[in-house]
Length: 245
Length: 376
Image (tube, rainbow over all chains, first blue to last red; front, side, top):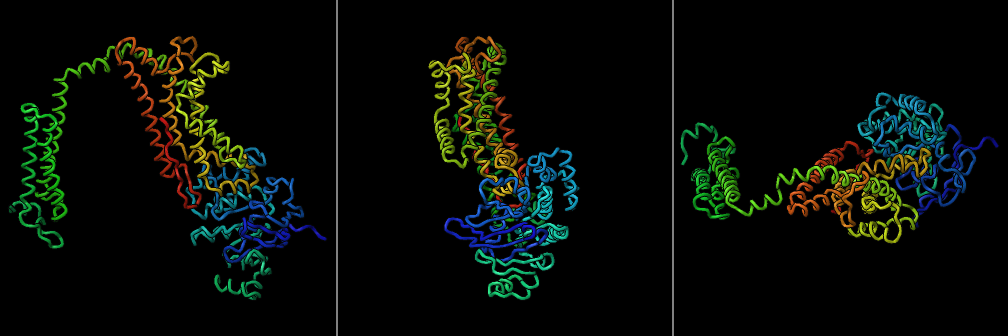
């Protein structure tokens, strides 16, 4: 067998009390692949994503990163998370520090990098999202789109192997969405392995290598964007597409 | 009575833009109000000095004020009467003269009372004796203020440090640690501070436990610190719990440990949010240092940390002089300390509420400031 998949989910299950959100997900994502996950709300998309870096503890099954099961006891979760970046719907920037400090905090405190070196990397990441000029301001003074680009730069500063995007444009005003999607497209082109939960079907069509349609806690369809969007097999996907397209 | 020159002055008076006419006869009311107001103003001093009817004399100028106010309201609501309208001007003048009459009456009455009352002279000698002020001032400043500030600083430092620890215990995932925190808070918030001070300052040394030597100031400060810990713990806990969960998730997703996320992200933001109630607690603590007299303070300042606090110095000097001016002066010392702190609290509160220093990170949550937790 060739190199292990970057991310692999084996019969992943998650319940909240009596509510079964994920009822058995199997998924393999090779390095460099961009996977867009779509589906109606409540289908378990976000929960699945949050299981990949163990923000949610799975109740069954396995999550493998580069072939290593991270759900096993004894795995250093903090170290694992350094390799998995995550961007949230509500940005979750740290309001009590400057934009640059947001980006460099984990470099300094988690990787133990000297401040000067961390600042250099931080400024480079901010420049990539076109926000170097905002390095010294507080996140409060930024627009939603700018906040989200800072959040992406903050994740990228840790040089993760996988990036998770959880509805990152859902809280943005429509005119600010494109700037964030552009940053994500560039990242995809640069070869980042990405799992993207989104409602932006245009982004799925143009950037994704693969689109996954989830419903009721399982993967219903899985294929290239053209196939999923133009030739849906299941009734559920057809119904979903008629709603969003 | 509508007089023609008024109409010319006011331009549109009498007819409003919608074409409503001012009801007939209403013009005479402002005139009456003016007459009443002026009469009240003139009558006020006469009532005070000549007739001397006591507080009942207030009725005279009150009539002028009431007439003016009512007329003005009436004119503004029923009629169309712009501010410059002579009818309005008359009503306003009636109100103002009535108001001035009342002020004249009150001030005059007070002056009359002060100048004729013998009791007041005694009161002044006993509480505001400037000579005694001057005599007491050096001791209050050199000993009282020093000890009060020492005790306050010790209590604040203990309360703030242990308070944060207690807050973290109160939100611990372990039930046993949470229970310990709740028991601590229940006890030290429920006990009167004076009992805690007695137990720590008298009972502990009597039982042979003398961690702070023989200086009662340290025992009292420590006891106050224990009390403050309970209050500050609750304030900080509320602040921490008001921080959005996404902050913790973002920190953890970058590889920070739970402790790091708490220390670097959650606690700093939580404390920032509760700065106003915290300063309130500091003010309450400053005043509570005056309770330390119950464990007996030595007037001997052998070391910098020994002596009596402001209240005790004031009280001792009052007994010595047979005059309470030192206690009043001690009170003034407290006010000089607490009023600026109160202003600072209000300023910080406004600043935090106006959004500087707090941020919503894109969510439409409103930061809930826990209500002020002063106990004194």
